[in-house]
Length: 381
Image (cartoon, rainbow, N blue to C red; front, top):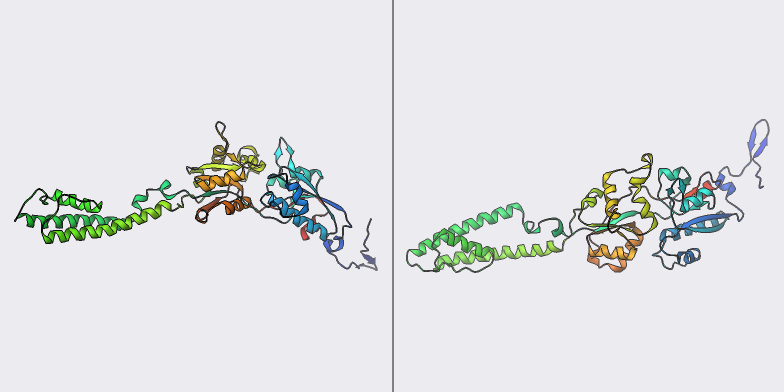
């Protein structure tokens, strides 16, 4: 027992404590052992690298490593002895029983754990302090190519330009026809433009940058044809250049979760423990705990984990490679995904990356055993 005099009574209570704050008076825990539960899901080598803090293999379990580094420093500030245990699951309620890290904290095997997402159901058994290693869980994908979602052959020019082209083609046809009619007074031949159909054929040939057997013979008519072909050649070059650009351009057709659910792309998830729980929450948890109980998320889960057929769960490397190939959305903690993207993507392949939020939750926070006498000390440290 370590006691601190509060004061004395002299008709009234006289407080003689140097500090009234709980943290200031109790921040020396005199080497007491405090255990942290660390979630390991990517690689068993984390059990070796996490306590050493050697910064090796940062692509594996980065959230657990960052949290441990922060918690260890905080416990050193409190003159406590940091102790660690490992769990392979964040913590979910299955058949009325908690599992993983939440069970470690709830049962008292650990005093605090690794950053995790807050849910109302977890609030019943643990408290939360500050966030040590914020992370996001998202669908990451490349926007589909523009030709995949729209007709690019009408996009190079605006409606007014298309109308102007149509009007100019009609005027060109009429002009060539009257010039040819004037020429026909003096001579006729098999290649002479004689009818409005011949003039229209010549105009269509100019639009398609093709030759035509029908053509004027005199200088005035040939000048008109020359101007017509030259103008349409410039227009054809602009159209072709725009088509080339549009063939390589990404679309912006997917901006929200409902658009992702209806898109004709493959939906998949990282093959780790949490995805097998969070994606099917709309089906399994009680209604009062459901932050999202809608058909969009149920449809997404059915596409990732259908009752019949192939299930779309992939490891991190394969999932990122499929993102690079396109028409593929991958659900995971985004930080390791972006690290892999940095190592494998070309610069132009990074430009059309997008995210969609499935969980729609707050930032993750560190769970602490409910009713822990050290909660205030953790919070301040």
